[in-house]
Length: 122
Image (tube, rainbow, N blue to C red; front, side, top):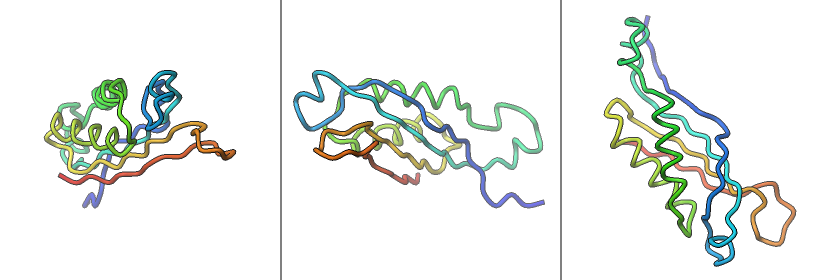
């Protein structure tokens, strides 16, 4: 058997944070949603059934939570920090695909969310 791809993912994590270009966004904050997928080689975990051979999604969540608490003007900056932090903290991680959305963005349109998608490779 050959494993041709593997990842750990967490979808639709909800955060209240103070990201945005407009000064009011930094004062009042808003709701954000983060989904991500972290690619790694899972072959060992498939055989061993040992948590040490995989990525811990609770640790990934804590990394995302920590980075979401630091205000930034741009969602690209926040997503980049999240990706870099995961790759630094988890040597097994090879790629991080992040979707970061701002709920009800202040842009004068009726839109559920707007955001950024980043694909980061080690």
